[in-house]
Length: 303
Image (cartoon, rainbow, N blue to C red; front, side, top):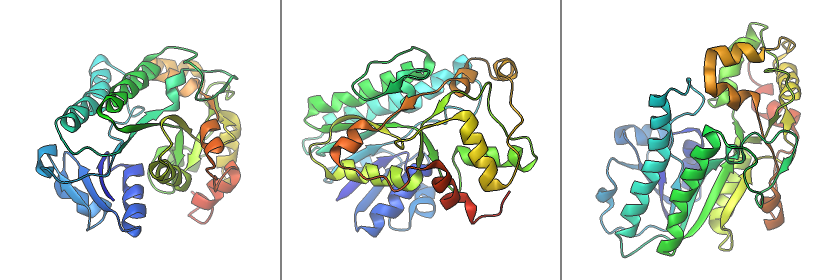
């Protein structure tokens, strides 16, 4: 296949490139820094700055993962505008370009997040449900998905990837937790009862490839392991694998004071379950949090 990726230089995109190159696929990454693509994604991956550089080349699939990091800094109005533009406006631009082509790919796999549901408390969340709360993150995901679903009007099969917290040995949110745990400052956020729908990077890559290959897959899929963990249990599991204490809580009021509206993303959560992936026959390699963390971090420097 010839596959076009956006967000190809990110954590998931780089892993996808490695996986698909090994399978013999031809890959093109649309990037603001195309000169970096070969170094980050693989020497055989072509980077382009403008979609028009593809001309009339045939594409079998598009994987749309681009988006500025959502939890890196407080959600000022300027930051919110960037988060929207990097996801929704970029997807709209991508769909407009695809609509201008006579030869269109058969499938579009587009990013989203479990935040689409809003803060769900203890309620199990499956793909057939409506959002249970409305906040900026859920509104962002809803707009992102709506932009991608325009691909159905162009005759494409559209898959929406409602991704949870991706666990990786290098990069991702685990890398941000290493220093506080190393200093003995790791622990739950707030009361620690919020749910964290996690997924091992290998399973994230596996399910994207699975949904690409299955012609009957369309619509939203919760991309997270079948056993989400509460924040308190996640912190304790991380402490075990890093051999560090995980008892020092970060009070909710401190997060609200320091991060403002963004704190809701950390103090809330989703008990999201991958109902549609399991029904489709996808098999997760990692369903146990301790096993996933040990696979990624257990053989590393123990902080």
